Length: 247
Length: 252
Image (cartoon, rainbow over all chains, first blue to last red):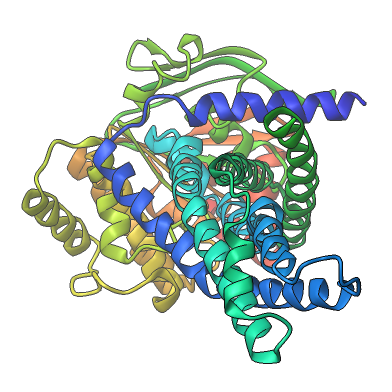
């Protein structure tokens, strides 16, 4: 239990350093743009692929489970929309990104630690935690919502494509289902969740990388811990945010 | 000048440094030598502030480093340059970007002034034309020289070198040694070299401090080291029978 408190305390102290005044704003701006490319744009492929298949599968599964003639076919479009917007495009995509982005961040910073690159920054008088972590946090919190919006569109489009091409639903019914009882706040809710998840993924992974000591084996262990802890915290915060925002 | 006054450091009850007091002189190459595990790297990390001391003071030209907080130490840190054992170059940056990094972070130079300074530093370490190579594309000796170029980019008053010759062949090691010596004399910096390479010590050492089991066991110059009667130092400097024969011939 002491160890848990130790990590929580050290995590918050690290965040205190991360959010302290940056040395050179112009350098940080450049770093944020680089991180947006690395964290966000280079994840477009996996997010797109995942979203297309999720949307398609949700459509087919919903169609397969509608046996009763009492349930209208447009329910397929409605269910696909709700599933993609409320949960899949934010939570599932961020869980996948915690593996891709989180693992990458942790191993990158961990390697810098064991090869003394972080020590080199400290000796120069640079706030290494801020320099290395802050641009990643800002970049992720900025770009992840865009990825999630793209995921929503791709998932819903894939559902339409698969639904109409397999004949389980007509385009008219699908579009009616998409528009049925649509609440704009649900999109806001999912984007708020995404921003929180982005913060969790980048800060937790950076924390594990920053406090890596030893050699390559420890870098691997840190990377694993970063992904596991990020995923667990995403699931917990998903529950808490849903309780707060939707009920 | 760097004054280390009575510093101690322990890890989990294991006393690694015991009441060490030593002075590192400006414009001189000051060596810290000792066997592996003797505490010389810990001593250096304490001096540069990567580790906190349990007791004692470290004074950089009348500025008590140990009493300053993290932010107040920044000014002194910007006067430091350090060459790491593994070079510690930023692997995602080119040679040029590595050398330019401290300038971008702290200097008020414009881009062309920074480029001039980078090219000067690279020329100084004989790495002209290697600007756009990445650390993984250059040899170990070149990485060390890039490390030196980065360390001197900000005209450091204090230059620290941790095992500068480890992993280098003897000829490349001498090139690095001579660079450290020339830069020390040229810039008048207080240079502290941690090493157990006796060839370097004899080649460029001005003041030598021998650490043994966490204590400052001996200090003197390179001539004195060859004639010392201190048994622990003798065992360190002349470890083999062959070296002992050399010592006898030197004394004879």
